[in-house]
Image: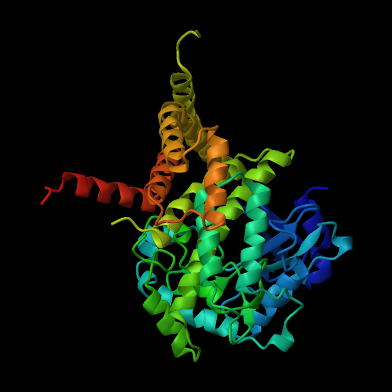
Length: 328
Length: 133
């Protein structure tokens, strides 16, 4: 059976009154997990839905991943706490025959960075996005730990050790990465005073944006417990500015706006720690690019997307040099 | 000696055909993958043109910096180890310039439209043109 047939087969068991599904299509992007869009047909009309699943043997970083069932719980908790978030409709069970994953509401909006950063439709949203995202992050970091699924506890030191190991596993010697690892070890600010939920991948592609601003936070695959400043640093990584390099927050805003939104929601931002995590995040994306190269080489699939992401690791090298060894 | 056209010319012709004649017919995920594939061909064409000179210059810098000979892989391993162990750092004569030049040479092939690369090249041009005082 095709994915479309399997969805149509099981929809009645989890969507009351559903008679079938239509318009199933796999969305582009997403090199590790599959995302499908489809419409649930029921007597009152149609409801847009998204399937997120990990076929057997897939996953960007099995050891880092929270797991799709945990992702579904986090998304639901975020939704209940007022974080812009899709409602979870169904967590896949073996009888569905669709591997592991879940189904959620399809939220209208845009995730493609170049459109968000350039199209007129988002012109009024752009100036307020950084501040909005500061508030969203504050709300995420404020989720009560007792309500969360079991997640990995991470520290800067543990993250450095993982990056060091992954880099050596994925790539030949890279002097710029060595420089960054050395800098991170020498500048590790130590464990954070407060440990919170960390989204772990809060950036373009995982944020649905509308003309009114942020509409939904997606993709909790890399969620963990740790230093909340990690999320603020990650969204400032130059790789997510898509050419708008003078606007550190996603290519649309300033750090000050991000921090103001965060602090207005009752939490404190620590700019020095955020900068540390920006360096870490830049190296992390570089190592992830090397990981894509490795998976391209070892997987029978020979994905051209993964191969080309492998050649983007040098982008993080120039960004690391701009951060750690500026010319002039 | 191989006959013409050169690898660069062949790859360029294939990329142009895909870009100009096939791309307009494609939609959705296939269009995305075709665009990535064309980018790959363009990257290979740049690498064929630029790599011999940049590799030679990199090896020459490393030989001077490290005071030893070896393959490019060996020399890079030695530099990486020196940095990891703290024996070489940004204050070591030649290290900063070497890392910058090597990285710029990689970006010229991998992603010459990358924002940080374009900015660094603009600034280098501005300072090269500025009258010395």
